[in-house]
Amino acid sequence: ETGVTQSPTHLIKTRGQQVTLRCSSQSGHNTVSWYQQALGQGPQFIFQYYREEENGRGNFPPRFSGLQFPNYSSELNVNALELDDSALYLCASSLALGRAGEQYFGPGTRLTVT
Amino acid sequence: AQSVTQLDSQVPVFEEAPVELRCNYSSSVSVYLFWYVQYPNQGLQLLLKYLSGSTLVESINGFEAEFNKSQTSFHLRKPSVHISDTAEYFCAVSEMDTDKLIFGTGTRLQVFP
Image (tube, rainbow over all chains, first blue to last red; front, side):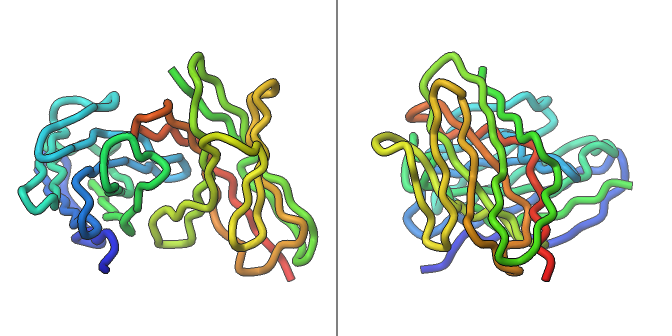
């Protein structure tokens, strides 16, 4: 059984550009959540997807968007990148909704915006 | 809305000494409580959780935490730390039956030989 994987590991973008981050959920998990962890801070909830539908969103602007595919893998898209978007982006998958204590986190993607 | 306060940003301690990492939370509803650990350049790993039942919960590597409803606290303790415990520790809460985790700002535990 493979764990949660994320790609790429690191990337550098320029302000104003767009970026797509990818997450492959743990086998059998149909729920994925995305978090942003700025340097020296705790992770902040961006949004969650359940069976390909958004199922809750944190305090992030619409330029943060996502997708979940039939195989339950997921993408996080960020448009019009700003310097403050530099952070570690974490995804977490779980077997079903309402399982906050059973989320498995990936290693994260480190995004640097210059 | 919920919030989590981790009072100590850094906790230096010598190997084999006891340690306590403090966590207080604020919520108007019942919550679940969690401690996560993050090793350098890695994601988050669940250390332990309180969902219901006994207020004292333990992890497999010797950590324990006690849920104190009257003090709205969930402090993490270990009686004897090891060098390998050096990491960032995050306290988190979620409303019951939801998936959204609210994290504290983290406590860096540095264990010295």
